[in-house]
Length: 153
Image (cartoon, rainbow, N blue to C red; front, side):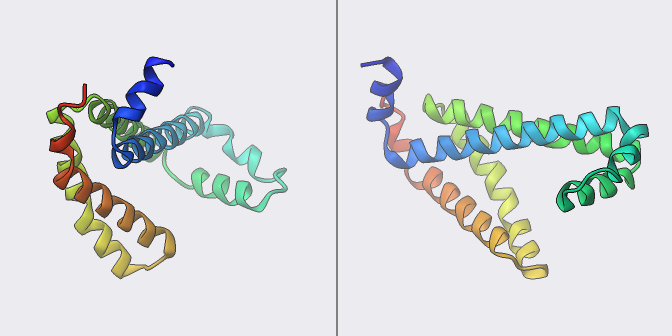
């Protein structure tokens, strides 16, 4: 049996799910960051792609990106990249039961919860509600359960 499988069996399911969630967020945010960086680097040619695209969503995204300033695109490429790296660091820290990772998750997720509630009240959607529920569960799990597995290794 591989070391990874053995370690996974030693960890509680909640922790494994939280780490998978954090890794998934990191991957999505890093992909978004790369895509926006590509748009930023090829900003002067974006209008060339909006007309021939036959897919509505691609055309819509390209038209909206073309309306942004290069400075905004540059920031929009950096922000999700940094947050993606932070999510990956959190996942690694949680996997190895590091105390600093617990605090990093509590501060990061805890600070975003009030903003998510306000956003949900302002413009409600099932996606926003789902993210609020998942982040609330992640916060609660790390707050209540994480200290119990600091001795799993």
